[in-house]
Length: 183
Image (cartoon, rainbow, N blue to C red; front, side):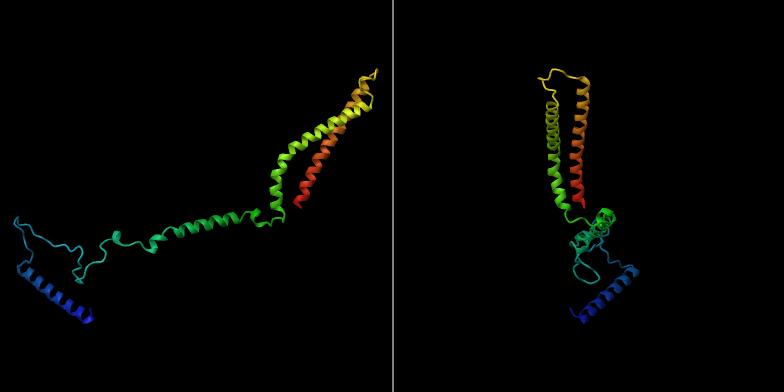
């Protein structure tokens, strides 16, 4: 409809409203009554009495989904994620640069943990064999007739000391290897 048609329709409605108001004031009510004597009042649900057109939506429930509804909680969740990331970024381990071989070292550590126990057991077996060889060389085998308890005790203490030193040296070597990987 053109603007002139809307204007003419509005003028007609205003004229009818004035006439109705005048009739009500003069006592000629335009409200109809039913058989029981109750007044019937009309409610326009789908019709807009002002424009004379059908109403598009009568309530907020009838509105279709909008972009605003779809992104309603998105802003809050994005801000919360951003704040969480900022707190994580303040950690000094995230700021400090990593060494070029950090990933290789990480992967090898898993394999080396399994081998540590076997290494320790192998070192103990070798030290026991060495102790037995030193005892045989010192003449403490079964063919020797005279055994001096003091010399046996002294020799055993010396052998135990060398075995512990060998074990400590082996563990120091493994620690030195891991420290050189860190650099």
